[in-house]
Length: 150
Image (tube, rainbow, N blue to C red; front, side, top):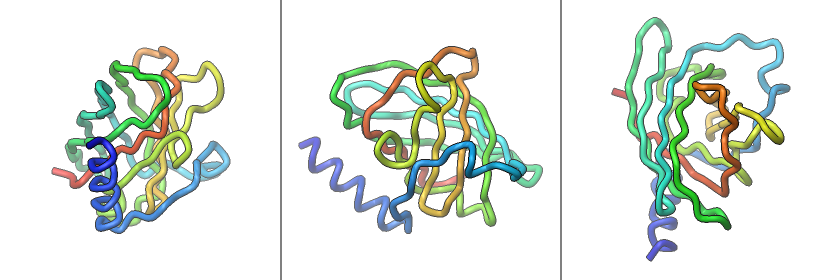
């Protein structure tokens, strides 16, 4: 059943025009200025991610919902609350779609970090830091999907 959901989720991501991406890092944004800011809340439980957030871009704040899956070796649950910068948006629709983590395109910024890096198929890079300065937990092969902005 979980495998079927994962396949269905992957098809949704492909239909959204999001291809695979590579893990971003500080070098990817070196010399670049952020084009927006982000606040994000993710709740992880039972292999699923739900949450919401807001993107400030071009002087307007847009809200969004997110869903996702966790494919890690260790079951975990908890909340991630973060804020940060967004790079590489050329048009608003660049922001939506599939953001992957761990073996995909979102990764921890080294051991003991409070920074999470994300990239989607249109090369939008998000640098998300835990809002309270706490160390973010290491995560599995997570996929976060943002279908649209409101």
